[in-house]
Image (tube, rainbow, N blue to C red):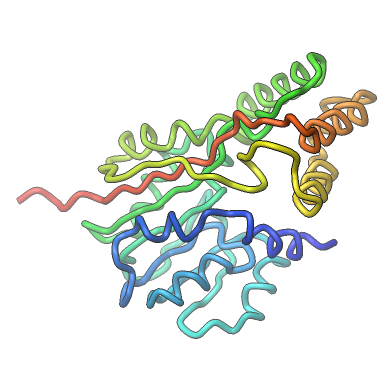
Length: 253
């Protein structure tokens, strides 16, 4: 299965309606969708009356997004680490499941905020503790925790980003207005995973080359244990999906 197909399959597992309902009214607004993927959330925003500028670095995902031919949406290739000037300031910024790739998120937010008009909003959604699932074997838990620490130290990914969204937004000068945790059929759920969710986890783990390299010969065992945990009748998740919405303050008179 292609990466784009994997992304398209994720939409039904997310709690997007609840998060979109928490946003300010977007009808007539221009929204910047950072890390737009295949354009699923862009489509939701367009349906709610927004004009959307989607940005991503992955050419396969951008092709899939452009093939949707969404009226009122355009998709551009750009690096979120060095976001170019995209034109007139937008009314809102949407960013889902990309923040964790920026361990120094406050600095990235300050740069992204230059694209946002004063009084505009930003909504961040991110998982916290991606591998937070039980029951796991002690050796698997230790290997995954070591991998998460190494990823953070290398500046690749922060596995604890979800709980940090509010603090990063405040440090970047934004004023949080709402925060919540939401359920997720793939990332934050109890009980055995659905067959399609389990297949998605299998594909995710197979794509995680750094994890494979970090685990070495023990990777197959780690993979098997985690997948078995997700399929277990008594599976429970400590992972959570966090959403935080904030506004860019108006300049002081």
